[in-house]
Length: 358
DNA sequence: AACAGATACAACCGCATCTTG
DNA sequence: CCAAGATGCGGTTGTATCTGT
Image 1 (spheres, rainbow, N blue to C red):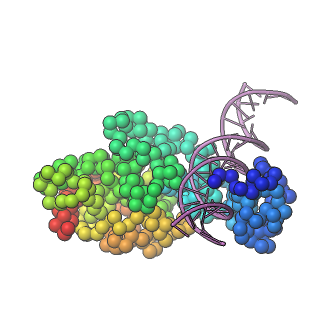
Image 2: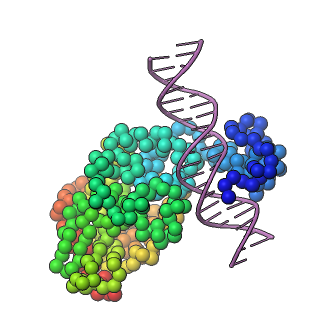
Image 3: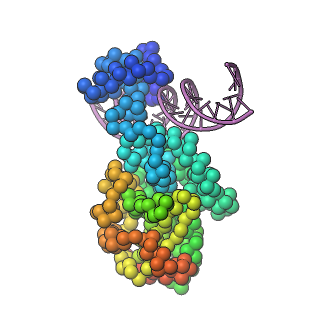
């Protein structure tokens, strides 16, 4: 459709808004509300199209807008959200009260991108630039066209399910999950994908980012999945190319935006109960992102209600008991190889259990 | 002071989706 | 169900301002 139809019929003003125009629009909406935007210009006495009026109101005149520079916490939150949501500016803006998608987009393009690059982080992938550069073509996921999650969702996301299925590979790249050094093969005929191409990432703690020293920290969880070998194997699981499972233990990652580095930690594997038969496919990513967990507020107590994934009830209960994954991991000093080995074995056990329940 | 380039921000454009008759 | 209009979104462009020479 493109340009609003009224713009063709009438000679309408374009470009910057004058104070007089602002006043007319502000007065009209204050007194009457905007109603149908296409009728606003006429009712407000403006030579603009409704689309232009709407944009002016949303980005500039709205009374609840927060003015002034972005705080470091806001910038960190934007980076964090962008790593999950990509260029879904409106969704990012929804988590920063008083900020508009337009100004967040502008901030990203004019400032944050450069800062990340200066820290050696690729703003598209959120990976260290050195890793991005060494990521050869042969290692890229086959669905390379989906590798850039910064495309417009309108063109890349056909359905919720498609979106959900496509997100994991993007984030497995980002999180370099192979650091966990899973056993790539087991005597059960199962394999945990070493490159973690099916790894699913769930952000858990955006709302509870906290200051540790001068560092703003947030935590996210990474949920490995298991892929099955071809049907000719002796795998106890049959049917379908892949089975996705929720890991019995969740991995916490702390993002330290001050130095651009990532610190890995893994909760004590024995502290988490295995819940083998829940079906993560039930939860669509978009539903998750629209869940109450994400609604509006950017500051939320860690002890508040856990986020919504109905099939993850067991997990939620555990998360709510973890008061500080960061210091917990520091104290326990879980080194990656040992912990990941246990982690990997738990995954395999769970996969078998899952397969037998089918 | 004048100019050019960089930067930040405002606004537009085109597309997809939603709504309505 | 369909078509047209309305709305929302993200990419892009335009412009004012800043900064350095």
